[in-house]
Image 1 (spheres, rainbow, N blue to C red):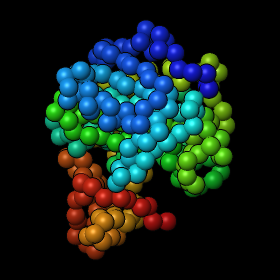
Image 2: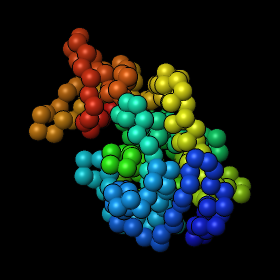
Image 3: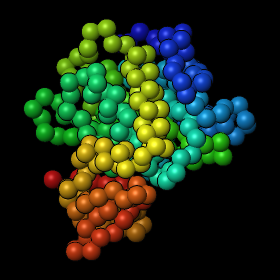
Image 4: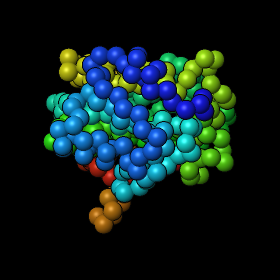
Length: 260
């Protein structure tokens, strides 16, 4: 798993509709780099930028995403803007969890709007294994994914994080980071295509994977304070619908905490 990514294995097995994949040794932020390339007309939709090491990856609410080189997958993909673009991070999360569970026998779930969670052994604690950040640009939507693959406990960036290695107790025989990345890209393209054909099929699949639904939550709105309630649905625009004291409110943004 820790051998350097091989660009020939990636580009030689890249499947339609993806057209271009670039691998760089290091990037401060693949999202920022791909967005700039799109603005300059140097990157079209269905372009992928992969960094072996990302030193200042962008997360939600100004957070950063970093990893030990060779232990994870950090990449960004430029895709066309679909109907109801607020669903793109949710579609991405669905594709990510489906690609992973097709290879690993692990317990994973999605936390609205952009986190992949997993459990290690009999520990019931939810560990963040991957994060997603989507940004609308003039040339499309840039989807950034940071996935912890092979980190041990000491290499994880923050307490409460996890990796596929820890969740599964190892990796399937013969699986490489190249193959895992290609699996994710394939599944992402498939789910975006499904969305164009029948969004409700994708919404139903996402709701089935989203562990936030049915939970007591706390929505942190920054300067606007916090809103406690029970998450009951994700609406057609991708907003989290929360029962707040008997009335429902829909949130398009906010830091969500699962209240135990």
